[in-house]
Each structure stands twice: as structure tokens, then as C-alpha cells.
Amino acid sequence: MIVATSTAGRLRHDLSFNLIMQMNFRSIAKLPRNTAKNKKARISDALKREIASKYGCEKGQSLSVKCSYCDFVGSIKWIGSYVTFPGMHLDHHIPESKGGETSLSNLVLACRDCNIAKSDSLFEDWKG
Image (cartoon, rainbow, N blue to C red; front, side, top):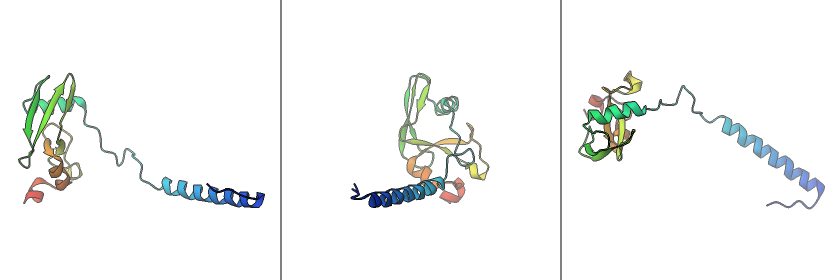
């Protein structure tokens, strides 16, 4: 905390503080925002239930599943209408950046490491 001993000192502190605050707000304004352009669409709960069914999981079940790219074992948990994939990520087999859709036929379960390593590569280019 800065303590000003005079009116002039206090004024100098206030001006400095205001300049610093303006600089911080300007730099914050330059940060990328989650706009429709750069934010990935959320995968719907209905599609998550379809994916769980595709892997053989039914409502009320918990099922062990393997990563589509390696031997890592994660799981699917379907409780009520809510489906989670502990230890797994939903991966676009053909990345969205390469024209892949967010659809049942293009989404696969992958472990975190494989999904991050694959990034936006095609499977053939990544494993090849």
C-alpha cells in the first residue's frame, strides 16, 4: 500500500494508478474472446447417448472401453440421461479443420494423450 504524505504526492499516485489500470484494460481487450468464430460447438447430450450406445453401453450401465488409437482403458458411465466418459475424450476421427463433422460416424473415444497428440491430424498422417 502506498501512503501519500501530501496532496501532490496523492495526486501523483492517483494518476499513476489510473495509467496502469488503463494499460491493463487495453491489454485485456486484446485477448482472444470465445466468439462463435473460435469456440468449438458443445457435443449434445443426445449425441453422447448415441455414442455410448454405439460402444455397447446402455442406460444405467458403466462400461470399460479402449482408446480407439492405443490400449488405454477408460470408461463410459450412463446415469439417467447423463453420459460421461471418464478417462476418455471424444475425438473427431476426421478433424473438423479437415472437413470432419460432429456426427456419430465421425466421433470416437480416445484417451487424453492420443487426442492431444493427434490434434488436427488425420489418423493416417498421425500414425503413419
